[in-house]
Length: 303
Image (cartoon, helix red, strand yellow):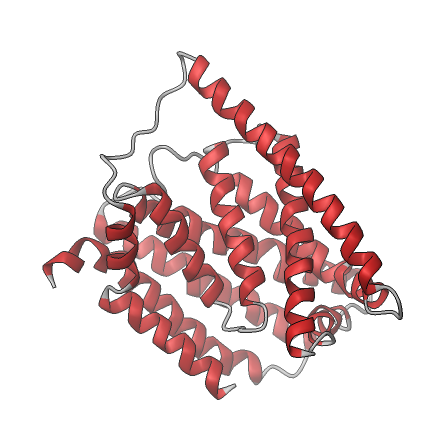
């Protein structure tokens, strides 16, 4: 058990958040009015992700993020961020199309966003939706998964830290149908932190993806699922995805070249990296992390 000791504290925090997420489902299920649902969701986002994380930082006497990551005033790499945004939304659509074709559940992917849109009756309703379902979740989830969880595993092995935070992020949604898309999104959001060194990068991306999913995705699914529309849509999506991926890789290369050539820029202050497989396996199978995964599986099965 001593081998799991370094990985236990962040995993215990994750388990706490998963328990709070499970309990939050009981509260949101009793909200009848849309405005009440929005307000409840906003409060829960803070209680579930922010308060436990701040308490964790307090008792661990650590900063809210790794010293190599910052809260830059503005993301400094707009082309990189736009290309990663394109990879996330296009890749997620392709992944979901694959899942839909495999299980015959294409209609599932437009329903959640469409349901959210039904709560918009006027301008105030739109503000509620944007803040409650797009902006606030982007801030709270990125603060927790990329700010706290990713940072906690980074000194052991940065690559393993990316994968552990990605798994935790994807499983936290308790949605097996969209799990592959969440894994892709989480991986790219963590990648954006590693490249830009700014937590504002995944917050910006997450918010933009949420806005896209709520306001544009339902209409795109209607076009995609129209007769003779699927193959044409896949062709277009693959082409655009390749373009965005190539731009993202080119920008990543340029960013790291700039890092290496700038003597004023501090190098990564990560500790001596350990084995990727050791960090990933011990992190994944530490008792609290495994318990969080089991809890998620139970919640998925009883839905």
